Length: 297
Length: 246
Image (tube, rainbow over all chains, first blue to last red; front, side, top):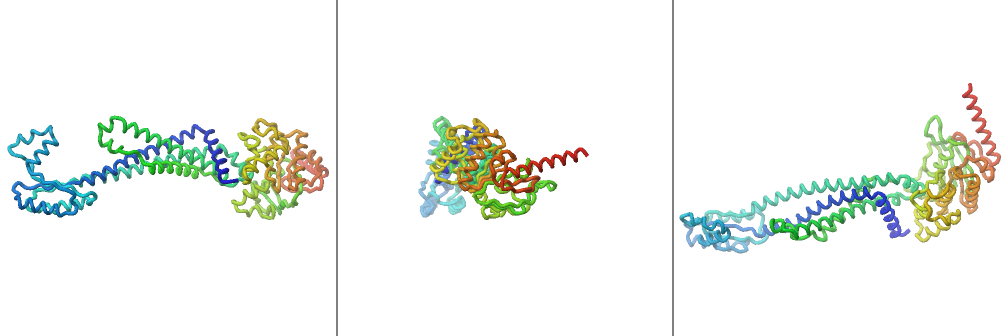
């Protein structure tokens, strides 16, 4: 009997058995589907988070604030120091009037606030944009520190620390997500295993007859393995449909407009590789469920 | 072809199912295994099919000690042996054709060959018109013939039948044994376990008599042995009645 002919036979057997127990089969598929749906959503968000973090990382900036009495020579020396650094992509000098103008531009609601004071409260500064991938928060901190003690520099500020904290937080979220995903997928495997075991029990007489007429263990097991794989595959495809529907629903609704971050996170749908990963994971989990169902010779 | 050497099968120490049975069945032989219920006929067939392992002694089939066979070789042994079970053991949700075709499929023949063999053997047992029927739609005799077709579809070297006429009326029983005789004429070794002494008497073949797990006699023909068994049964019944009355 050729491999294809055998596979056709085993697949037919598996589908017949799944149809006979369609209620529990649907339950099993729903379990794996919901587990993979959550895992898929996680992948979708992760896919949006990583580029966002990368972009924020690329937009790292350092502000070097000058003291009130900084001389033109001191300012020039600082300018030369900044220009000489390889980590700097671009920089601009913002005098006190420029800083005030920027504040009024960026915070129009508070534009009158500086007028209440006698003097312009904003110091002159150098606004430095770093090159993409110019280093870890530690390297950025070292870069900033190299200016901190120059004559005329009052303070140096940079925004790498919160980004680092966000990354740490996301790492924890990743681990928690992976743990929850593992538990959910484990539960799905056990459900498939239970459904397949139910099939083995219902067909025990048939299995006994097959054994007595000389069927190899592989011949007896194959339909059950296909059943498990099919349940996993169907569950994964249903999960993919669910993820697509969720993506379309959210991305076409007004939510991304009201929550811009969400819009950025849902910037792109999971790629073909992620989709293939989900489908393969579903099938492998289904197979694993069948394998641990204990279909023995 | 089949040899049992001082074989014992003990489930209950007080009443071994098979006691020290030694016998030899030559290739192409037709043998009746007879005796009252509980004599050990079914156990003996199960030992040959390696459904059971002997507690003591050796069972040799086709030159191999089957107790020593690794588990992975057991299916191949069973494919050499066609079995007709007393309760038919048919798959109720499969058609007649599927029930028989399954055995052909297990043997790994190409698909066209499977179909050809299945059709041929079903015609041979007179079920050519019932291919798409399901076992519950068939009479006992028809179901038994499906079981026989399944047993012989792969042309096995040995056919074992456990009370194949147990559920049939006398005419169908004769028809069934005639089918076994035809299979035997093609060179297949046939062992039929039956307690139907009248039927055995109609087909003079070697008859092995079992009683309480022991081989009590071996006759060249059915008629004398059937008498011997009948007498032995009567004696046992009389003895038990006497013990009960004392």
